[in-house]
Amino acid sequence: MYKKQKRMQGSVAWQSPSNLAITKYWGKYGVQLPRNPSLSFTLSNAHTRTKMDYKTGQDKDAVNLKFYFEGKENEAFGKRVFLFLNSILDLAPWLRGLELSFASENSFPHSSGIASSASGMSAIALCVCSLGKLFDDRLNDTAYFYKLASNLSRLGSGSASRSVYPYMALWGETDLVHDSSNEHAIPYHDIDPVFKSFHDDILIVSRKEKSVSSTAGHALMDDNIYADKRYEQAEQRLDLLMAALRTGDIPQFGKIAEDEALTLHALMMCSNPSYILMEAESISLIKKIREIRQDTKLPIYFSLDAGPNIHLLYPDEIVDEVKQLEKDVFSQFCVDGLIIEDQVGSGPKPF
Image (cartoon, rainbow, N blue to C red; front, side, top):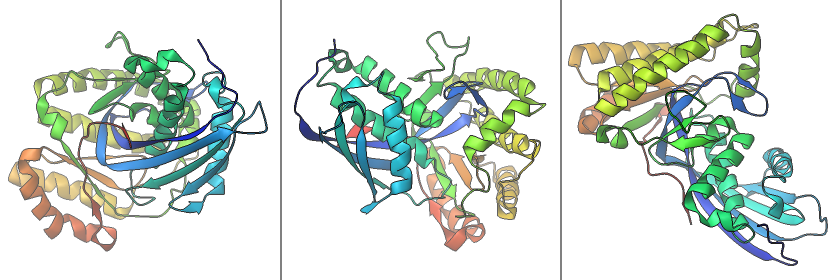
């Protein structure tokens, strides 16, 4: 099945999006395996573009590389990518003995409430799989290609596993979906068309680096006394979310999105040691969104990742009203009035 070539040189390139989990995974075990399933929106405008140049190297067993981010060598992330690629050689043996050079850039700023590791690591994994087509005929099968890309992405960053599919993706084994898996995400198709054009605008209240990393936060779930009940709750909410997505029930969708976001941050607050990632402006925006929703009946909702910035979720049919609200109201809570506009997208693509 695996075809080894003696000398080779070339390049592959992928643009891969970030994603926003509506039902959150928080807590993992083994090698990047989730304690509970998560279901996410694939974003459109927030993406990473990565080009991978490759050639045969001198070391026949390892992978050697340089990593450039937005034109400058990034040794810290390059070391992370080096460790990642050398850890997946059993799954991607064609990488052995190669010298790689990555040139990567993001369409969004760092520390902006968008999962850059999801877009960045999935773009790298997709490049690896594209190169693999030269060696493994199975990768010419589209389903197998993206399944392996999701698996490799997971090993680099858990949430990255969901970025390789359009619109929505499910990661984590659940009895609710027969082909779900902890090792890779799957595309999730059973959704009303209204959610395929849903908006996700990120209200930037802070650009500071997080005081506690997501990796550390996941580890703290091991001793969290609420962990087991949380995993049960996540499964229950996933069931409710799937019903809302299928029927186009926006209010139910929004309630679950908000409840999941607040539960995520509540778990942080009751960890040991406890920590808080939300800022005062985060709370102010949450209150303002709920106040405006009650007064205007506009279907606007919020979510958060593991950080302070607010994701504003709403259907495409009210985009004009929301843009005016962002200008007149929400921007005053944001750093320099910064709001990053995004919406559900069609997934990664080569370039």
